Length: 400
Image (tube, rainbow, N blue to C red; front, side, top):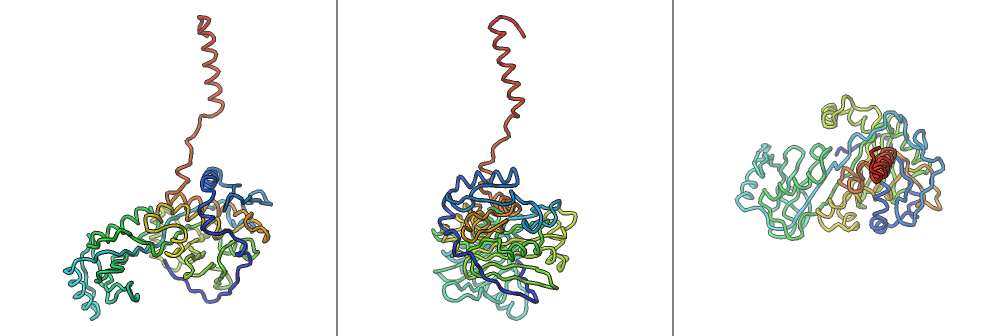
């Protein structure tokens, strides 16, 4: 994930977060009803169902606006979800460290790296470059050795208790791939390195969920927020500008467990041709849309635990429900918000579709509740009529 720095920014604060829904109640209540409603969004491109709890009723004054400042869509013909999934995943585990022979070898290579060298070592079937430092954490979280292979970083410790390993997959390794596949791969690397996890298993210390929306500009997204037509649970919102244009919006704090950033993805890729070519190839694009906005949520372990996830397996079993909570309850841009009843505010249609795509990518409820196509009504009536006529003439001993 790329950090973005903007030359000028201004801060705004939340007006309606105190009226928002409780996260734990939101996450658990009304699941079956929400699943059916989100499946309908996937098929029809709109939804009129409840978003956050069984008691919520959603109303819209415009009947499902699809374009203009109220919806945030600047080019309906180019409206498309280009990519979604996870953009960063970091796991940690306690247990038994790797064998002493490997630790001794890593100590020698780390000393070589501190002298300016670039030592390499093969671990878990991959070639890693040994770095001159560990993870710089304090106390039991300190891991002495750092190894990098492409966009994957592996930290290994030499203690007999506490955290013994941590592994992180960055954007180019995760983006566009099945989240469960990335999760299994990282756990497999740690195991093949010789680490024996404890019964608790792996813990997700960070996971980023993202979706790239073409046809919706940051200016349009900011217009919705500036008009106070968005609902969110955070207390801090910051906008970034460059050359008199809004280039990004940040909601919440990284230290709070949930952090949202929305920014101009096209502008980011334009500044990095190599990254742009990788993005184009990965998403099978002839060219990158000129209007492209990224929506990215960063979650920490504290928030995941609050949502009922005890280990990494729990997180990936619940990933679709987590994405639903983030995009329909923690933050949602709306057509109109009555500050006395923020729970009734309906998200704009493109945001709902974005959430459905992300939930489906996370192997969520959309795939489970989608029904097979039924026989067309006219064909069914014709078949039943022919069967009835055949039955009547059969009793009479005649053939129609």
